[in-house]
Amino acid sequence: QQQVKQSPQSLIVQKGGISIINCAYENTAFDYFPWYQQFPGKGPALLIAIRPDVSEKKEGRFTISFNKSAKQFSLHIMDSQPGDSATYFCAASMKSGYSTLTFGKGTMLLVSP
Amino acid sequence: DGGITQSPKYLFRKEGQNVTLSCEQNLNHDAMYWYRQDPGQGLRLIYYSQIVNDFQKGDIAEGYSVSREKKESFPLTVTSAQKNPTAFYLCASSRGTGRTEAFFGQGTRLTVV
Image 1: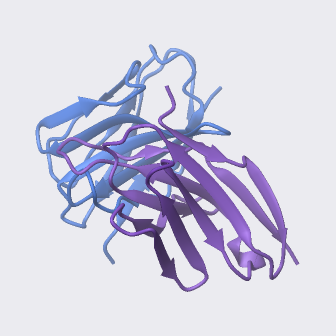
Image 2 (image 1 turned 120 degrees about the vertical axis):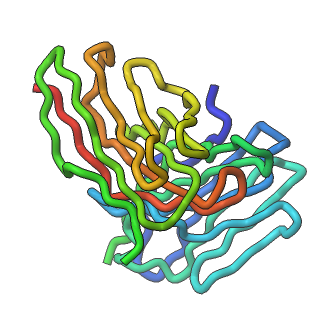
């Protein structure tokens, strides 16, 4: 049973455009929602994370929007650059002990020059 | 530099063989994890450990075994019972479970020949 659903599976955006990746979760006990970025042949790295007490978090060109009532959150990449081409994973976890990250299936982003 | 070291980067296994993937961290993290990554499947949790000499099964533990004899080390053995072991394996660590950032190694690509 997939607890975090991510879409789209792949995305092509022109340089300078906005990339939007969406995730939906089912478990209302989740209270930590990070996004990871992975380049080919490398391990994922934390990009940005949000907790449900805020509806939006921005770090440079990257913004997470969070909708608690809809159980959805999304990543927006403004002014997308070719260097942003990577696979992006959303994830969720709970505060309680023994909680681990549950990942979405990933979105492969290609930013064309 | 602090980080997570996985070795080897590439590993080839014959049918019926057990192989062990190494993971070492010098971040002084308590929790360590093993994930398997397949195309289009995201990251699936194999095993995790919150403390030395203790570990828990993840979502896809069958055919795998781990040990945690030292805080810094969390090796994964892929046994002959794992029916489809060809995949990209990622080790990660974090200060604790729940709402904490996971740091990933560079991965080991295992191929059955």
